[in-house]
Length: 207
Image (cartoon, rainbow, N blue to C red; front, side, top):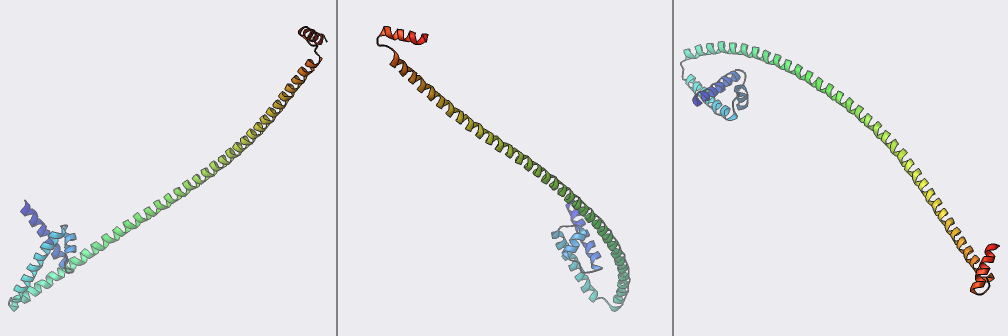
């Protein structure tokens, strides 16, 4: 099985080399691409094909003139046929290339259209995001104003509370002073002695 596969690769390389040689000198890269083989196989079998061609040329040099003339006529006929085949192949390749180019142009046009659409969608999305950001910034500005207003109210309430506390402290101080003065007054007008103190207290209460 391995031998048949090797022969198949060799046959493909030889056939590709023959086809390419009708138009130009075959190379490893062109033979590899045409035969669909590895670089190593193309290199190996193309060299064998070239060696065989050179050997055939050497044998042809020793051939009698009559055979050379016949071979030349045969070669001319073969060349004409090969040239016709080459022209037909060239026309086919050119038609294939034209179709592929048309397909590629259509594909490029589709890609450009997709790119334009995506760009438009991106611009729309960016505009929407910008509007949303602006809206959120407006909301933040309103919240900041409300926070500042709340802080001002808090400061006013704190100031009012401090003022009230001060007033209460002053009132308490006045009450304390009045109570002390009242007690001092009672001490001055009350007679000496416990009984007298009680009477004095009763007298004051009766008044």
